[in-house]
Image (tube, rainbow, N blue to C red):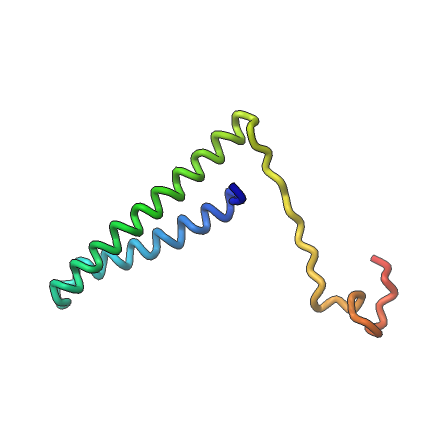
Length: 95
């Protein structure tokens, strides 16, 4: 499992937004029945995806609390817009 708590929460939020809007489409009175049926089918798939992600998040939290997994912090080392990383950019390399 290469997911982090943050990435799982992000994915769950995105799926929840998709579920919300798909549910709206599934109930549209002005849409054809075939459209509403297709949207209900997609909503079921999105719900399954959400449930899988929630289960994965629950397992990750359980593993961390039990000491089976250790969360790591990955630092970002951004190099853009920093003249020290440009050839001939005039940076002296000192931080």
